[in-house]
Structures are given as C-alpha cells and as structure tokens.
Picture 1 (cartoon, helix red, strand yellow):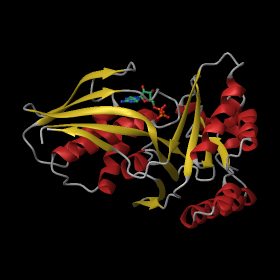
Picture 2 (cartoon, rainbow, N blue to C red):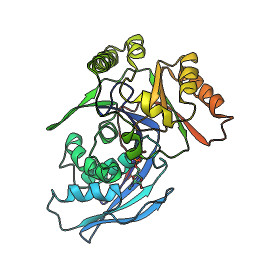
Picture 3 (spheres, helix red, strand yellow):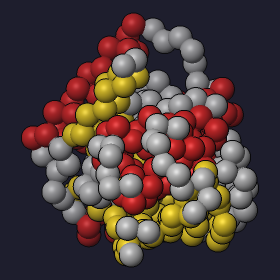
Length: 309
Ligand code: ADP
C-alpha cells in the first residue's frame, strides 16, 4: 500500500460523569485524511483544507503524532499527510484528536499494521500534548477504538473499550464561540470533597453498568457530572436552557462535550435524537450565536478506510 484515504470521526470526551476517563466516538462528523508514502524520510503536511492550521509537522498535532510513531520504526522512507478538516478547532468534539489519531492510524495501515490500535494510542497522545499541554487519551482512544472507551489508568496506560447499546444516539450542538482547552481546565477545581467524589463514582459505575446491560433508564439516571459541569457550564451561553430542552424532548441526559463549548445529549433511538436537535435549535435560534448541530449514532468502528492504493 502506498496511499490511504480515511474518515476520522469526531469524539465526545468526559460524557458527564467520566471526566478525563470516558469518551465516545461519533459517526456523522469527522475529517478526511490522505496519507501517502514519500521517498524522503520524515513527515510532511502538504495540504490542509477547511481550517487555518500550520503545515509545519512539529506544530501540527498530526505531524507530532506521526513523528512519535516514526521514532519506533526503522524505515528509509517517509509520509505526506493531507487533511480535509471538517471538525472545527476548539469545538470540544476532538478536532485535534482526530488529526492525531488519523495520522498514526493511516501510517500504521501503510506499514502493514505493525501496531495494534491500542498501541497507537500513546503516539496519538503525543500529538494531543501539543494542542492542550497534556497527553490525554479521552478523545484519541474512542477515535482509534470506536464506541465508548474508558481510560482506567495512565501509568501504565490501560484503555478499555466499553459495550455500546444498539439504540444509543448522540445529539451535539456546537455554539461557535471559542473556549480554549487551557481556559476550560483552569476553571476546574483542583480539590473536591469526599461527598462529591462518592456521587461521581456512583454515577460512573452506574453509567458503565447501564452501557453493558443496555439499561437506558440506568444510563439516564447516571448522566450527571459533579466535578466540572457546575463550573465550566458558566462559559457556555444557554447551557441550562439546552439541558432543560433536551430532557423535555426525551433525552436520557446531557452535558458538556469535552472542554466545551459543544453540548451533547444522549437519546434512545434516532427519532428521539432528532427531536432533541430541534429543541436545541429552538433555544439557540434567537441568541445571535452561530451554531452547528449533529445527530449521530455511536460509531463502534472508529476510523474508517475510504480508499487505498
Ligand atoms: P478540541 O477540543 O476540539 O480537540 P482543542 O482546543 O483541544 O480542540 O485543539 C485545537 C488546538 O490544537 C487549536 O489551537 C489548534 O491550533 C491546535 N492544532 C494543531 N494541529 C491541529 C490539527 N491538525 N487539528 C486540530 N487542531 C490542531
């Protein structure tokens, strides 16, 4: 294989009660990337369409992730990367993660898959470090593995793929205001009470159990965030109104996607997810803020190969 074209999905990190550990993979929104072998060693990024991003591989998460992988293989050629960037920067649906995950996935395919998908996660995390200052895995893991993922531990890295209920859909609204990941992190309290920790643990356990048993009522009861949402939501216009509208339209629950400003809701069935989208649209219609809305099944496969030669 000399060239591969892939679809790299957007992702939702945290999923309410899973701050910094849970993530899920979307299906209807994502980037396209083309990766091809070059006779020259190293990484080049020749084209980025859709967003203004550096072509210098050391300043682009795709390049940094790819270079981290190349350090571990002994080859006398290199790779060029092209990105069609549909996921808006700083949207909170894993824009940087998609580029990092896509780069290492594509190169690994061309190399004949020397690494498992799990083994690609640390390379993609190196890319994420460039974007947010920390090498987090809660977006790159679901992009690479698909479905829901849980980062059980960072030292050593242990990522678990969680069962996805068949009828689970996500609705995401992206208000086009900018919240930098660094700023979103700075409003989060560094210390929490034991009472808060206990509530969060109960909900995270409940959500994981609900996902495995496809118990939508349990999923709904568990989608609460005690750690971050009370502080971060202040940065997002109409957050509470969107939450209320989502629940009135039958969503199982809703919360901040990653570090925001996107807000997600989970629903049982596509019809419900579409109804939630209409409710969200109604809330944002008169705010004067531009927004995108996505309705998506949870993508169990992760990155998809579109073509290769
Ligand atoms: P998201 O939460 O949607 O992943 P982040 O704010 O974490 O967005 O990351 C976006 C930041 O990463 C931007 O500041 C952007 O300049 C930087 N970046 C570098 N390379 C890329 C890339 N290939 N794709 C997206 N963002 C990139």
